[in-house]
Image: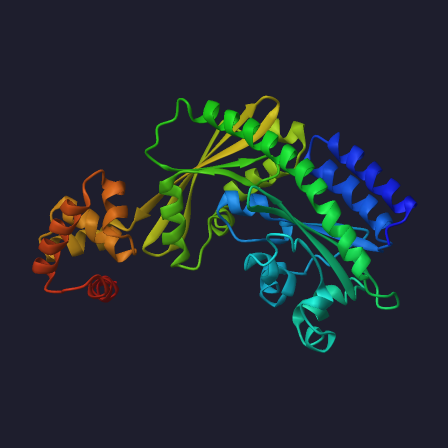
Length: 372
């Protein structure tokens, strides 16, 4: 049964979070009050909204712990496939009326103990019991909010689950208001930033907490190409000492350090002996908020390309399509990249096949490998 004291705490929670303006303030207020309501020793928020909007995978930075100092070496991306709560949310089973659940309802403790998720995370946090609320807005998952108890305590009761079901819509309403307001402000900032920019390069924009808030199609395609070499966009930054140093200044949240950033920074990051990436950084202030624009452009090795082009008498356009084809782009993607129709791409591919004596894109890639 939900007693009078608990009802009063829920009312206070609803009033408090309605006044919060930022995600960080929402997290702090919500977690501290939920711990009291559910008599929990700790709590955690997993922010799904940013990773979906930014087009990236979940990372440690998407998790916000309260009353727990998690080891810096801990790596959630390597563990989340063993997390039953992650599967519960990812599969969509958390939708509808079932938006709160106990970890013990998803997996037996005997099975849980065999996972790295338990030994490297839950056990390190002195956590045995977990009650999770899935916060939705218009069908999209915004966040999962969990409260935890140690092994010496009792598991959350069915009354706790019922109470969590009642609280979740309150959390969803407040969080969606904050996120929609934040996204609206960022979209205005991004429009102002890009208003006078030419869209001829791959562009990605980071907010002052270094989250991706915009990327154009060229950057998405470049990211896919780089992943074939085992590199993410963040990995590329690490390959240039100058770029890495200035990005660290931007991420410092220190206004004085951020103001020392040059207006434009240009450098080249080497991927391998045949490929490098030109990088340009640009710092921007919009409505007292800091943004970092990153322009990237792929540079192929001229000598290698020239040999292929001369050996098979490829035209400049055919050679461009050849390069895009061996990097896995579809006809439609190549058409967008070169501003021609997919039918023109296919026509050029037929000519390339005829000149090189191969019949598939796989064989074109093998041809490229043999020429290195």
